Amino acid sequence: MAHYDFLIVGAGLYGAVFAREAARKGKTSLVIDKRPHIAGNVYTEQNEGIHVHVYGAHIFHTNDKRVWDYVNTFATFNRFTNSPVANYHGELYSLPFNMYTFNKMWGVVTPEEAAAKIAEQRAAAGITEPKNLEEQAISLVGTDIYEKLIKGYTQKQWGRACTELPAFIIKRLPVRLTFDNNYFNALYQGIPVGGYTQMVANMLDDPSITVRLSTDYLKGREALNDLADQVVYTGPIDAYFDYRLGYLAYRSVRFETEILDKPNFQGNAAVNYTDAETPWTRIIEHKWFEFGKDAEGNDLPKTVISREYSSEWTPGCEPYYPVNDDRNGELLKAYQALAAQEKVIFGGRLGEYKYYDMDQVIAHALQTAENALKQS
Image 1 (cartoon, helix red, strand yellow):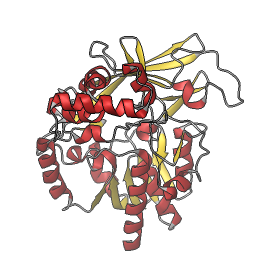
Image 2 (cartoon, one colour):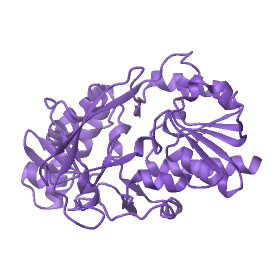
Image 3 (cartoon, one colour):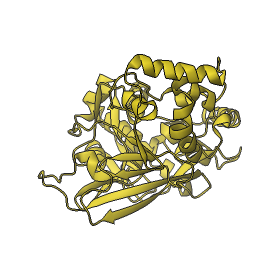
Image 4 (cartoon, helix red, strand yellow):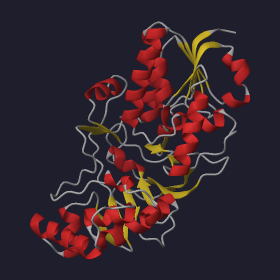
């Protein structure tokens, strides 16, 4: 059996970037993944000429020029701009919250009128120092928008009342007194032409990188550890320790994907269903990430949609979003203390139990690889 400098557990963005950086320094890596494919949760597969985001929509956006230049060495990005729509019982509103939203909600026309309406509703609610997500949302956009466009969606997404969720979750939500429909405040934004899977495949395309799929590290770690000098682990940190201190909580997502014999279902890549009664949180129409065209620029006659259902994570489900509350914060510290005693690099969304955007995953992988390669 070959011996490697690094055993990298997980063929997602973090693992692929780390392996590529190791290769640049002349180091060898064995990259394994328990799934039968590379690219982790950014995995895309082609269906009816459409690159389907199998594990949910991923829109690359960043203000970090180093990261943007880096990913552009492995893919060409299109000019996709994320402009989701909110559907509340058939009423359609613009997201992020902007002047289109305020005009539809209240009939206001000027930024001054919109700001005054928000201030009026904030004062009526008596909120001075927001203590939870509900109070934070009302202080940002007023009671009407909170009740129609935030409350039901957020409670479906997190499975908890908004009064039980921390205020910081909603602080990143864009609120604009302009007509800007771009959801992200980012200099760079787009989707890889050809899909994310091809981008990750390009990262892993190096003679010093070996990829082995359908390989569960936790079921054969002793033999696998013997194959390398250093382990980089991107799976769940609590699973690494066999959950000996208890389970960290996650939210999971279930997808119902359909091929429809029509060219256009909803006219937008993402529509959020913000009422509490609709069981799904949003519907993704994948073709609009690439403007409804195939690789040759032809209109696509069919479309693919995915309904997303949020649920509490249980063993056997896919973990998506860490639940940031006091109980999980304390448990994470205990697992981090155990991790500090291991000669293992724990990285990524699951390895660090931390919500990361894609650019943050890449930036952290680049920095961690740089530090590790200095020492090797």
